[in-house]
Amino acid sequence: MAKVKVAYVCQHCGHKEPKWAGKCDGCGEFNSLVEEVERAEAGPRRPVIADDRPVPITDVESIERPRIQTGIGELDRVLGGGIVVGSVGLVGGDPGIGKSTLILQICSRIAAAGRKVLYVSSEESVMQTKMRADRLGAVHENLLVVSETNLDLIRKFLEELKPALTVVDSIQMIYRPEIPSAPGSVAQVRECAADLTYIAKRNGISLLIVSHVTKDGSIAGPKTLEHLVDAVFYFEGDRFQTFRVLRGVKNRFGSTNEIGVFEMLSSGLREVANPSELFMSHDRTDRVGSVVVPTYVGTRTLLVEIQALTSRTAYPAPTRRASGVDFNRSVLMTAVLSRRIEMDLGGSDIYVNAVGGVEIEEPAADLGIAVAIASSFRNRAVHPRTCAFGEVGLAAEIRGTTQAGQRVAEAKRLGFERAIVPADNLRAIEADGIQVVPVRTLREALEEAEVM
Image 1 (cartoon, rainbow, N blue to C red):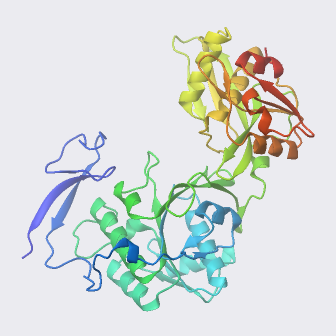
Image 2 (image 1 turned 90 degrees about the vertical axis):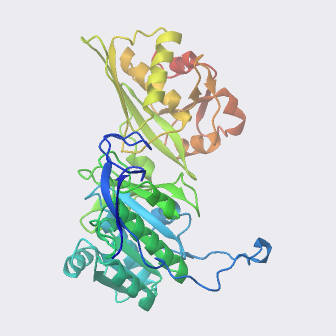
Image 3 (image 1 turned 120 degrees about the vertical axis):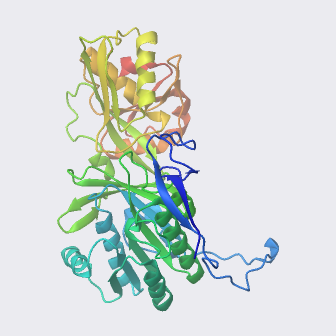
């Protein structure tokens, strides 16, 4: 009889402990250790291939890995040009956000292009999947559907059919029969993902694994799940709104700075051709506490409206909140305005928001955040049809940023008449058709924006 061993594994980082503890020694999370039953196996879990022997790297033939085009421009951009043949991708997102809708549309497009696609649904029946496919218009004879949770049967389907693309939706319900843990446990998720990755790479099958996220926003299961795959994508957004953002956080075959913007309709997800119109208000007149920032994401420029609201508080500790922008940078801008511009912000609640649900992390948004806070505090609207960008230092100096020319060109294309830019970037900007205002200090920028 196989020997049974019990260990306690952290759901967050995968760290093992011989006994239960309230806090994980690996990542510091509380109440994250769960019991895992380990059973010694009589033989190797994966077959040993006799031809697999170490060879000199100079003898390895370099080949260009082909890609499968999905036909969805926003998605192909995030993927780096399409799905790489034989790659394994992980798609995460909150329940109900639209992961299955996006995946089924991908399967339909690739099947329509003449490639065999296998959709493994572990949470829905074949009939439920067919009903959603009818609604999305994603029905094609090359799209094969099966409702299965047993990994042994899924492995059999992959080896027999050898599809160009396989989707497993979702990994939380897949299980290996020889592992006594319940589906969705740390052991099951890790081992099933490892086996699927092994099979896909051995047979040259492109694989997409769907996974839910935990309440803290991380991919469910141990962190090692992200290390097993070639690419990790998050599908973000508020399910009560119509817009969704697909973001790459790991990609061995492309950039991790790209985002794809989609609109959720009754007929499925539709890519947004001009995301800048989504992230800023069409009415740019008399808007106190609002400024548009040209931000650079991946290979394109997006114009994002940043809003700020300041309000006097009666409590000893004022509130600071930030949504869509880096909280630490918004607090830093508040400190610079208080110390260098002599604005009395110590007794005010401050809220900063990036419109449209986009996440801005680059320092070039510093100037926009500072201008929006100053505009709200002074109760003065920013000069109409004006955008601003630049990194703000602790001495209130404005530092240059990358891709300044592309930022100004995008603002001009969308009808902006003035651009407040770092003086260091002036040489890289073509000022034809738009007034470029170079500034060296934050005070100069606030005066040009007419919020001082």
